[in-house]
Length: 83
Image (cartoon, rainbow, N blue to C red):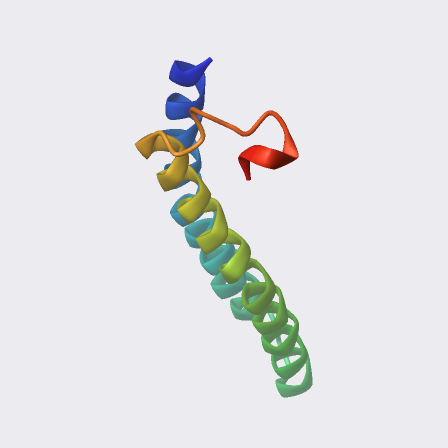
């Protein structure tokens, strides 16, 4: 089980930057498809909000993956006294 946790930690560390790269590329693509100034402004605003929300999620995913890869989750507490 610990091997699976370490493997998934590596997956999560790679998945964080990949998802943000994908979102940035999608934002650039969608803003480039707009025709008028109003559409461009609305699209930039929408993608700015999307990126603002998903950037901390992506960073948290990378941090969680780093801790899993380092083995911080190998010994989990079994009862409240161990906390």
